Length: 121
Image (cartoon, rainbow, N blue to C red; front, side, top):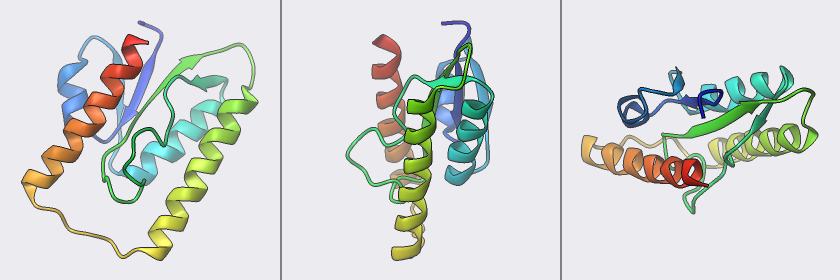
């Protein structure tokens, strides 16, 4: 597990997984673009960028687990590109929402739960 990296904008992930390499970014779009950049640098997705039942533009928090590999993983590349396309589509079709701190914390917990589950597998 020490070779894994988690790209996230979720402060709860940063708190919970201090022993793992965490790349903390500013926003949801950065999580996806940084993950895509790593895939192009021979990393593969270990968690799905669209995991969970919440649409990508609804939950402002996302974490993606990646692991190093020896060559470009085309499945990961296709998956992250499709996720970015979906995110952009949702952002275009839905106005940006402002959430209360309580709702933000709820979304952080959802993301944390998904990452906990992915790390157990």
